[in-house]
Image (cartoon, rainbow, N blue to C red; front, top):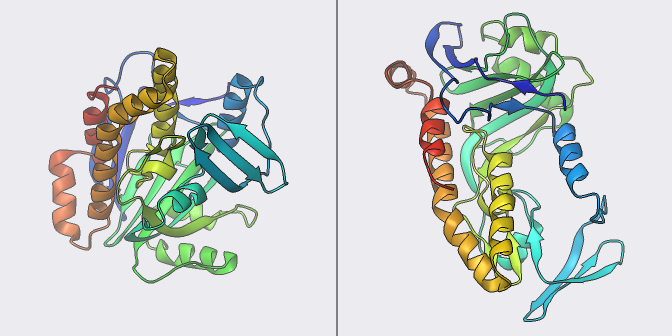
Length: 313
């Protein structure tokens, strides 16, 4: 497996002009043998699929209808196929249609941010250290990956913009971060036209929801939050791992689901509250007080990871 280990690196926070705010090493944040890894979405999918080769996988299918009762769940796919199972697992992301059906009154919370995400070539001046740059009401992250690539994320404080067409999204990205110090400027100046930009409002779950009974909601669909701790995929994988543990302990499905929800709730609620609150704090227009707080307390990423890694699973 090709991968980029960030063991031995550090999280670096800088002003938009390049001045150092704070930094902290990744070393000793977690147990030996479990380094931070950054890998593309496609690579993660291949790793997961290799582990479930005995399970039928239907690509491009969605659930059009489902019905729950004491016997299990019946689903109808968009291709007309019908399936029956003991349990429906809804892992369909922050805009989950299954969650919306089960909880029609729950709407996503808007953090007041408009953001861009993309992967591109690594600029000069970036080695293995993730760097986060801060403007007055904006921020830009450059996160090293494999094969001389970087993941980039930028956001601005914006309560109005709903969406942008591709050409306008690129234009706005260039304009909003034009005054930033290199390597941000280098990334944007040399951004190939072929690079796909994913942009939109930063929306999160107002609270975790699980469903229960014969339908269980997992991952971002259950507890999607801001990305400050990079816990979107991580918490989804924890969901899967702990659910497997609980299902293996008993043949009583309801007991297994009850135990799983009990184990997961406090942890995912903490991750969500920390991530959403800190993400809004980082985009504060109170630039001087924010920067002074970062200088005194260190990177919000590493502070949060220390607390998270100390929590029991």
